[in-house]
Image 1 (cartoon, rainbow over the protein chains, first blue to last red):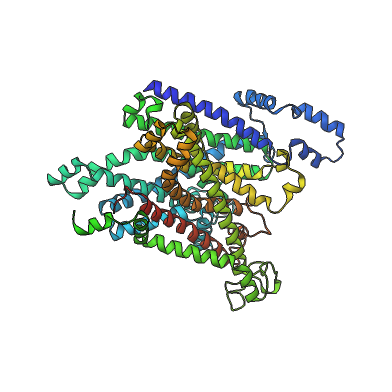
Image 2 (cartoon, each protein chain N blue to C red):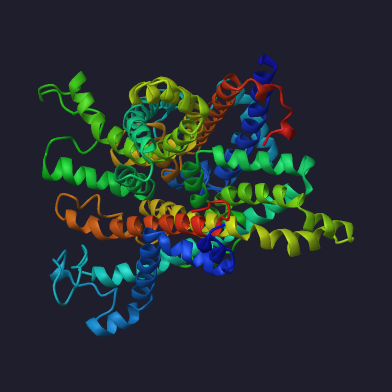
Length: 328
Length: 306
């Protein structure tokens, strides 16, 4: 098992390295370069100055050499300065990372609260009217444009009803009662978390339902029912455990799409997370910040994948002992 | 075997598929909806003649007007007719999605066939690549890809600034990330087909790999390709609308359902109704493609009996 984990870690490191090069190359292809920004700020720069500046920052060197220099600095924790925030990029990133993890964690928890009961109940009576309704809800959840769902939520709860704030992390201003307090922050969380949870729940329900139906067909369930065990115990005592185990991997693997959803939710609700940071830094030509944001998003996804693989191997020990090529 | 079962056994495969498809009411309704939508969208020039003005006519005296005889769905913040703009936006959104879905189907099919048929190292490499792309946070990457300066890639300034380049760009970048589902399904199908008797017979008769893949495996793997491609159209419409909404996709003055909503967020306090139609159409089209894919899966998958 530990060999299996070590192998997966090593593999992910290689992927991360490759991705860091790809991302570095892509960011280099974005319009403008840091020197252009300086020229815009100071039109009196001569072409000699520009050449000197390029040499100073190493921008005249070939891509591989620049990447090597960047990597050497990055490995020592130096990811450069953010242009927009005028602070080290990692310093900007860290609080954003916390905010994104709060948003994604809360949304996943809420999505599970919605998906588990609905998925289980739909599986208990497949093809019933209830199952049909749940199925429609799932299709709606995976088909709705995320930004539009956020817009509708804002229109309904902020514009029409006036119940909840339309965005931000907390009420701004010292004079307003309760501004920045715990309940105030909580109120700001409801719409973004609810939106992201609704977007996520559909896929979860479909998986739980399918996996429950499969489990409910098995012999040990029939045995339990034949012994006279009640429906609640069969569902939650016998079936759920077996159905939920494969779901752990789905949960960990959904990290990438959850992050994409978080990017939109954060942008729509001005939630100061990594997703919004990446989007703003791409728009604002903040190369270092975009780079570090994308790298951390990739790193988190890769970690999610490792957790998924390890969880799967833990549930089914045969996996870790099977050579790669023989796996389905 | 009772009588009806014997009758069905004589039914041609195409008829059986058709019958199965018709049983999926939502898929049939979705197909009808999509056809109507496409007809209305591509009839936009006729609607323009009927209404007496074109989609780009700005009328600042009739901004954000409610629906009326002159403007069936009202007007937007510049007084442009919403119905006509939605029609043209629909052409763009649907054409882009179909092109990107076809592109990703081609890439995915190629990868899946190669990985499944040749196996070994090539298979490991291609499937690792597939897993890698699936697990990446796609949206941030798409945003960076959409922001790339084409001049730095060697295109001329004129090409990079042309209006249509945003259309081609979005088709290409979505196809570049959207091929994974098709690749996995085709690989699985190829693995299964590779060991079937008719393929082995073809190998024994000395058929070349290329011939076996194209003549024997591809035609038998077409069902999952069709289903996965249909399902991916919905996803691609969503991705395109997200990118266009964020200002990174299709650029005005070309209308797309996504970029018609870009201004909606600033206007929710004054004109919340403007946010309704473009989003509703994206939603309805995506869900219709998903239902259609679901229905095709029921119809084309011979294992899914009843």
